[in-house]
Image 1 (cartoon, rainbow, N blue to C red):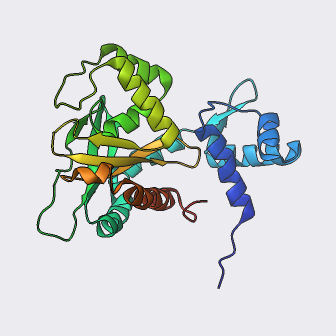
Image 2: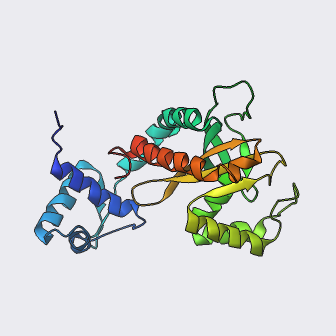
Length: 256
């Protein structure tokens, strides 16, 4: 039996997603235009959300997110953040690829492992939860740099010391900028033995419904064919996993 969805609830969350897209405040007229609804309906939704504590209205008659979301955000972090939701996705990804997999967040200019899954074979590369990865020389780190706000990325590049850790480490800032541009265009990042000479990886972003990157998933191992001969097949598995991760974190069907 198909579950009947409440259209008004879905529309209310579409309004909240407008704020999540980077807008700190919006008027009823702007909401009406964005969602293609009439002004009276927009006012009704906005004031209902205000009454529920999801929004607050300023003296100028525009709306901002309410403080309840700060409380809810703290609750999510106390409950383990995104890692529990991502774990089944990583388990499926490890089975599909036959390689170790992990998810990261970005913290203090480093990609931090928050979840991992290991393949069902005797030899594999492992990583500890909490391991921090340099941004400029790992698939996860470069992915976070590529998809972060321009100002934050420029700040990182202005102060970063790009040490040659292996023969393939990118040590020139101009070359790194070009690599980050390629990553933004292609939607994935590679580690071609750039941090350790015998570790290779492919990483893809996990985004929220407005396109902001919230985590990253990767497949990694000791075989260089991961980023060359097997890249296309592994990338398809990673992209499917990223859609599944978005669905696990934000609900709905994968890909919608």
